[in-house]
Length: 171
Image (cartoon, rainbow, N blue to C red; front, side, top):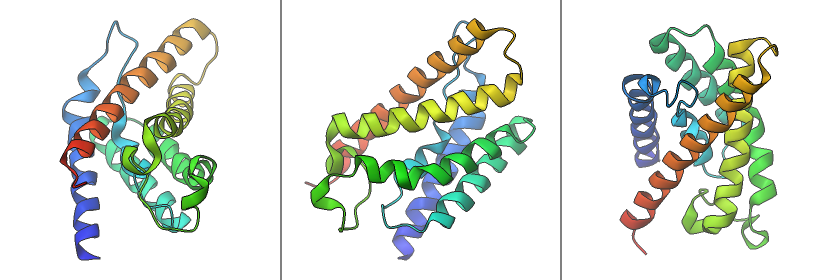
């Protein structure tokens, strides 16, 4: 229990620091910005209470907003992601593991299933984030480039992190 809490706290601080200190300063061609700070919500165990997802999403988003000088965009987005992650995870959970407690990862879900799960959540996250940020649909091509580019960069980070976690975990 304490080890799980410390592990989650480490992930929270690591993702927050990476987002604020590194990823917020990356803007490939002025459109694509990686936003993997919600990765913590993706890897929570499947039997985690829904309110924990929502509260953790809000707390994570709020701290990103405070350090990034955004006006509640990350808090609103990650709160919504916390709300939809449990049902989306149930869609991608293997049938033989529905009753067991497991943490979503490449090891428990295999690459294809985990990447589809991560892609759906990431696409919803970036779409909502950029719609809130732009608050306008007058430049749909720019909005689309922001969403697609940021989704791809975020998925690359998530896949790389999963690859490292896979290689470091005991078999």
